Image (cartoon, rainbow, N blue to C red; front, side, top):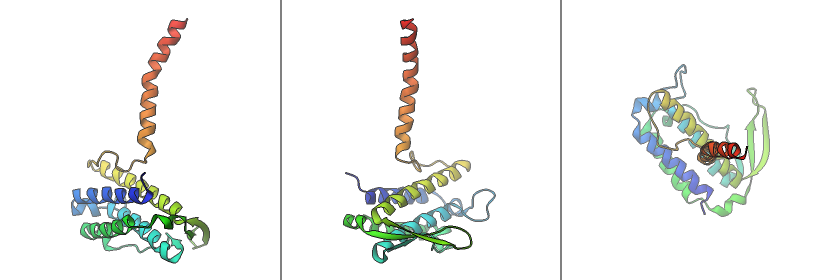
Length: 186
């Protein structure tokens, strides 16, 4: 059985492989019309979430909105690759028994800084961080596609997307058969 930790490590490995395939300019260049927030910004953002989750396993507080912006990870591929390697190693050895541990999740609700604290578990937050990483990988894939750069098959796709796509294809291929059956019944 696949664990959420294994899924997150796989996502980090996919992110690492993508970064290794890019050059420094492709990695650091912002999206069109933006002055910041290139692929490196998305990578930093995802790694911040993973680090926040790991920290919460010690502190009991998960504060995703408290993160450093403008770090080397945003512009330096080597810094990003080191950080991914370090974080993936810790996630790989994350004790599954910790998944049931309660945590407080602090969330900033508005630009004035209003905060709300909710209860969750490390397991629920682990699933959130994995899905959040997939979401940002999808944005990165679109950014690269806009530049004419492809990504690995399935990069940035939610686990249910290929299954849903396969169902729709099957339904579409079954539609002519159903139409023929109705025609024969007339």
